[in-house]
Image (cartoon, rainbow, N blue to C red):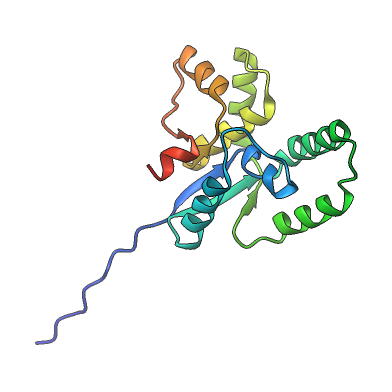
Length: 164
């Protein structure tokens, strides 16, 4: 009698939704609390299939605004850097770009009505919740708001929590 081969269970990669903070270094913008080694660890985790990074299309509003402010502050022309960074991010096979679904939009509105003014963070959190993802952010204000309103926060992590 022939035995059927054993199936090896492959661990699914953790679906991670990146806050725009994690995308700014592609534009040459340093982020306090985020080192080159941290970014390398995230990249390695993605390449080995431990995580599957996603980004919300809505984050472009925040990213481009921050890039423009930084360019004006430093009085530099970022056109060339920005073009390469935009191409790198949009054509990346590492990051999957997604848009918020109606359920996430409703939850984001609820957060705003409860008093959380940062709509990008609201959309990120709501998308992570409705899609069963982990939101990777260093935003302690969002976590504080969620706690204050007894909303789930277990799907929020800092990058250091992914590999420590």
